[in-house]
Length: 134
Image (spheres, rainbow, N blue to C red):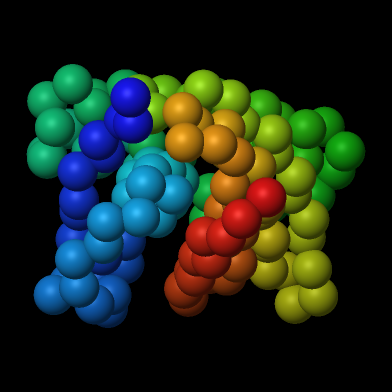
């Protein structure tokens, strides 16, 4: 029996297309995870009282010095935050700082509907997401 993920509205960023209804399970889950990774800790409680311990604004990593231990911590925190989503069974995280100090995070998310990839490109001023197949 197929899992019904319902639908959501595309609204990861303030400038997103809020009038676009999405029904792809990968996109619905990916947008929820992206919201978790661009919201400060506790910021999700405003829309979901159970979200008081949720949120990790990955932009905070753009301000510090990059070391192997800080990169390992970032990956561990992103994995833990992604796996807080009820539909995420597992998350495999890769993170890379690119030229100009920007950050690319690639997460292979395993859900009941199968794996998919969430890629986030993060800068101080903005971020973008791409949800695709494995």
